[in-house]
Image 1 (cartoon, helix red, strand yellow):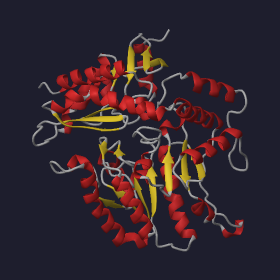
Image 2: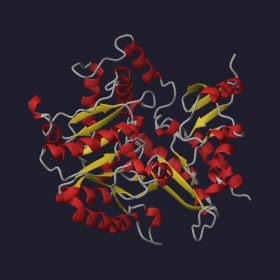
Image 3: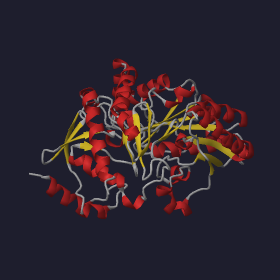
Image 4: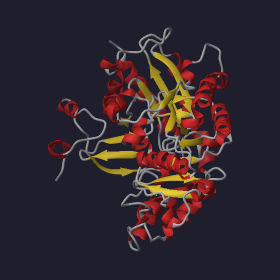
Length: 450
């Protein structure tokens, strides 16, 4: 019978884990999970962990969710997968219809891929190829924001700006235009999020004015730069950017992979700016945390630029073996059904209020420079000096100490550097939010004591 120790030893003899310095596991054991139920995970020794980060932001309605389980069991008895070139199936068609219905107006075409990075690759290539099909072959560049993250395949990595992920591979990446961002952590004392984001937009306007002739698209993470330490900005930036992209004839790509499906308080973050992008990339919560799937939503205008006789050689030749996987599509349909049948967005407003109340005391902590929140995402930034906002040296790994302490108390918190964040499944209770906050508080006390 497996135990934590036996399975961990076997794991370390054959596996290589993502975003991990494997040598760390010489002193900090990897945790084998036997099962998940609701918001809780359980290991082989019977220890339980509250999944406060939704297993890397994907799990929306809990592990082993009965409704999603039932949908998958039904689909499994009918069709698990079929080639998606020249063939189709009911779950893929129904999901595309549903995504057209719930995404912002004008996004009437759905292109499936396997994961978030792949969705970004699709959007980048599709934008470039659109302009090429129109004869504008000079359009080969992309504009991105500083501190942005869009995935780790080479195209997605190129349009990101977090050096931790990008710096090593820089010689392999295409050049992009990087614009200083609207990250409101850097606003002046007394300046509102809206005023700061508006002020910072002038830098984007300048870049568009200077480079629009050669730029295919601007790519952004609406409202929250999640992997970039959960930095946040005001929806006014989205409204200004949409207008400017129209003015300068440049596409707008909204990477809603992490912020879509209710994370920011609306079903999609773009709704808060009352905008429709030219491309919207979706993944993570799309299947409720069950199976890999992504979708790129785009417009009929872009679709029509590829629609021609075969001899034109204008088709979009991008494919994945598991495109439109039937099981993944069915899980996504079940996930969207939960949103619609249980009015999740309305319920999340109450949960977000409870999360804010649970974190009130962090505002006055001597080593917390800011507590920020957008919907169901709350971030706590640890610093060495609250007044000057001097950060702790990254080599001290203060956030890791919070992570280790929290695990010892039965809560899964996986900080981004020295930023502790709460991003729980939407089935979390007020009592569980209080537990998350208490463990985070004690973990921070532990991490900053020396």
